[in-house]
Amino acid sequence: MTMQRLLDSIEVSTSFFVSFGAPGLLLVAFLEFFLLPVPPDLVLVPLSVSNPEFALLYAVVATVGSVSAGLVGYTIGKKGGRRALKSRFASKRVHQAERYFDRSGFVTIAVGAFAPIPEGYELLSIGSGVFDLDLRSYLLASVLGRGGRYVLEALLAVALGEAARSFTEVEIYSIIGVVTVVVLVAYFTRSRWLSDFSVNSLR
Figure 1 (tube, rainbow, N blue to C red):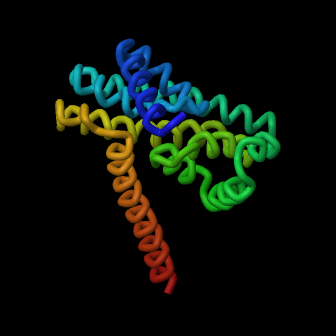
Figure 2 (cartoon, rainbow, N blue to C red):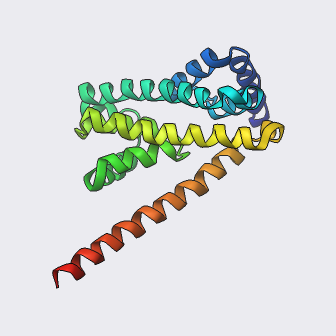
């Protein structure tokens, strides 16, 4: 399949899910975790533009669908162990994910759920089960990450109105990517500031 045919297929599929409203969004948000080539972002935005009064509800629906799918991944990781990860992802990515979990599993999931990283949420959800992140922390981080992302997109769609309909996947992900970088810089700056403050307080 050529790239153009793939893009055309995604556009048709997106229109199909949009036509079903909230149930279509819930379905695509769940199936995207299992490599459905239709991001829920492209369904959420036009729905929010068409019905701005329901924009936040759509964000909640997308979050529920995505986090529910992630929970399936978490369970796969718990039961399948490292074999479940290595059968789906390159060893390099698995080792990299494990290093992040060693530093902070909660932050890793929250950032991974928010950031537009291909297969990132799937990898980290399964990894959460493999690397023994407790379920409560996993769910909270997933809701914060995924929910924050979809709420941001819904609010942007309402603010921009009809102009948001023309957003491509790349444009949406670019916006999310910039916000992710800002959040990470703020987080690490805060962590460093608190560390320096603690050291100075002990002197």
